[in-house]
Image 1 (cartoon, rainbow, N blue to C red):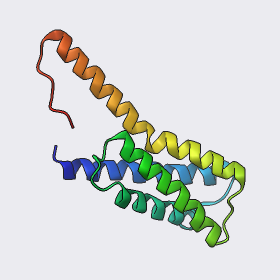
Image 2 (cartoon, one colour):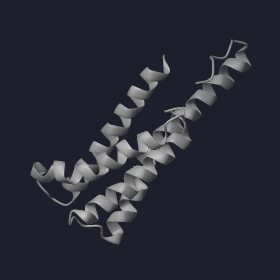
Image 3 (spheres, one colour):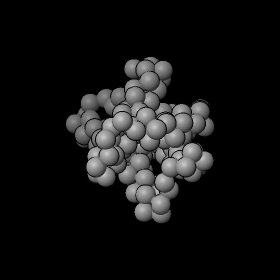
Length: 132
């Protein structure tokens, strides 16, 4: 798989997870989906900024996920505040935790699986795949 393909797939996973975050949040408060885009846009802008800031880092690296996570939360909250949307402390905490688990978590799980597969191949004498 090429670096470009990995990047596109990683961005798609991040995007889906941000969409899920917004959907869960709106549903948990009994809000209709009419305002979905208004809720999504600040976090989408943060996600895009995070992807620009992580340039040069491998897209699947946990550090890349941390950069994307931080930008998504910080810019998302700043834009929500600038547009008059709520940024209650409890919401900020939930956003930090959930987006952290989502955007960094899937990369950490992938890294763990890759390492475990590498150990399994090493213990059976099979060749290890090239590092991502």
